[in-house]
Figure 1 (cartoon, rainbow, N blue to C red):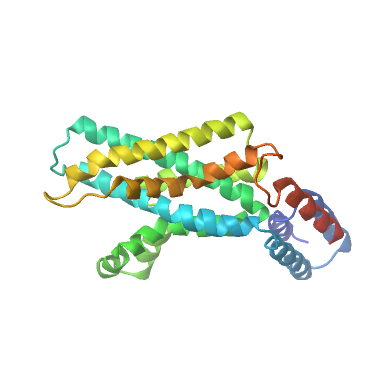
Figure 2 (cartoon, rainbow, N blue to C red):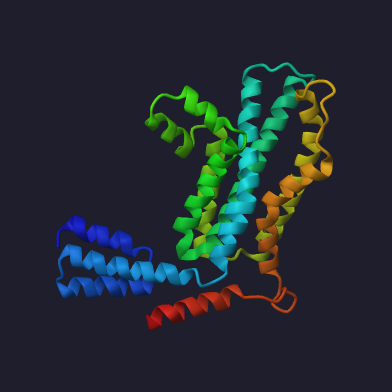
Length: 285
């Protein structure tokens, strides 16, 4: 088998658990099968294993809880930071001083980094080997849902020339806020797949930081937003503002629940038992 073909088989096999991956690649090497036949058998096994992962509740919580609930809220923050950066660069006239504008932008960017990493970690922890799918959904939800919600895609269709430019605008992180989301979330997902559960002290620290950021964001938008709205324009009540930031912070609450002792934890499926069942299923397969 050619070196490129073997590299392709090894790459596809990375979706399997390490013990099973080594065994499968060893069997393929000993069989002497052609590349096409070996790839067909390997893809069939990978598909069966990936489908089996969705028999657990955990990937579904990652899909609907992190990608849906937290992802939509995080998308609003990404979009907001892009707009606020544009206003600052365009010297948008407000009653705020330059230092107040910069302080708010730095705070919002820092909050985006923390929330993105936390969501990414929980996504990886819940998804496991299915993270390639849930991460892709999460990425496009955060990147594109705000654009679709505010109708900007329709304007882009009128202004952009060619399908390639439109595809780049909707799939690539072409803004500062998108990059501030992408790298922490990607790193968090990588760590979440490897660790699954954080030490208790780290969990409490992350939970405290997420709650503090949600409260501070609610307070900061209370004086920042009115300065950018027309006179007489009704502001957003603080409970509504707080709810938006709490939705993006719920993954931190999940980490806190997972860090509780088994006796005080709410009844439900356990992470370690799920992992043990998955490994036993793999051995039987």
